[in-house]
Length: 469
Image 1 (cartoon, rainbow, N blue to C red):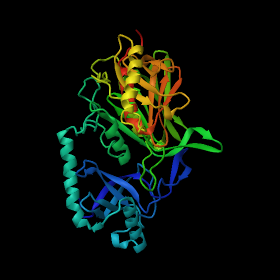
Image 2 (cartoon, rainbow, N blue to C red):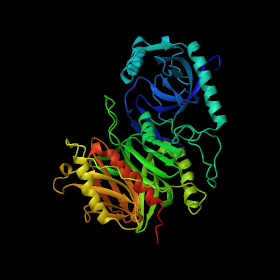
Image 3 (cartoon, rainbow, N blue to C red):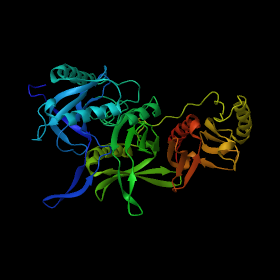
């Protein structure tokens, strides 16, 4: 830190209205005035090269006379910090380029200071205390040292799903050389980080993450306006590309309604391109199956161009080198010694699970082929679908199907992508073929663990199967 207490920060969430400008001729054209996702008396930024003890960038509350669009870099004057108990403090800073910005915390009006504190109390109730710059500087010095130490050590964080922390670009020609996710993962909202921690397998590593804010669709309209897209993130791992979009933003009670997740295994990736559309960008990927190819389109705002071009280079490397066995790709799912018992989450009789398991175990024994191994299964109880009756979804090394036989069966080679949504709003799996046919299986939300296991087993088993005999 210098005597002027100057830091370089990057905006990740504007607190007020911002303008979106696009190049036109020798100037710029105002394309839209964007409302904030959540009105705040400050913009939220990060200090990328200074890490908290949790190995994530310090958050910065930027106060000033205007709001700044996401991804804006600015030089700011440190004013102090707010801290709750012993948690990492929230830094407070003001833009140097803003002549109306305060030079210290007391220059803000009492109303502005109270608004900042009220916003923090609303988000994280508790006892907050103000730290002046002198008290904050040792914390930031330690954070800068922590970042540099992690960077030099080039070590993996545990658990294994967290990204590599190295500064060099890998060639994708050897298993241990991967481009690091750098700051992309830890810049995501915490609810996305938490999802990744729960969902990714222990042998997956993140290669890159690109965040998309909530936005209007570039391609689809509903009545008089463009459809609204919720906040999402593209996650590239060593095994798959995950298109993850929120169903509904968390409400005031911080209820998380879940995500819609579309997955393509990298073994099935055949082409990738980036196209400008109106005032944004489309990342277009094509996924192969035995009966054709399916296109998946991810929409993003124009300011995400740099991150998407970086991700594009990652994906193209997998397309160009897909025949190379040196690349670490999906591995076969483990074969269970015993299938877990089927559970009816609404049953009051403890013996109901035993009867359900015994009934479908007999059906499975008759339906299973001699050369296939069953990887996972999950129950669809009678109360959930009274017109159909009780069923069980089964995933094997060859196919995904429903018991009793005859209702639904798909060879894994025909699957181009898979989709999972587990939420109190709606829960379902979608299996999409190379012909674009979508086969949807709805399931009760309390049974999401068993159906998540079916989803993970299905994409892993499909990824290692050759498309042609």
